Image (cartoon, rainbow, N blue to C red; front, side):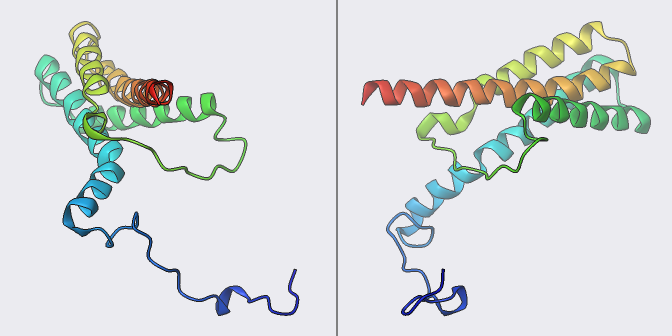
Length: 160
């Protein structure tokens, strides 16, 4: 509650800089912080291009309605993962992701997306291949990345 000597939010002093805050550790520190923050969205961007690229390679340039199927598949895949995670039932507060070095490269999830989407594009006919590519992209990348980061975090904790 508010008692004598307690400040309201508007009266709080500006936060002090800490050594781990962006802008306080020099270029290399800030670049590292930015790379860690951008790694999952950047990896997902690469995975999206990969899924669309191999599907285009196998089935030709998509019609606009096939592009819509790709988006619907990606959206549906995200929805499936949200249901599995229980994210639709309660309020969640995002937590920071801890990564270092090569963990930011996400080679395993990207390789899985490449292989799964290429395999699906080879056997699933158009236009349905665009729907499956979108789903495989989202489910594959985010699921494998989750397992990879959890495994690497567990390995790091075991070693320390």
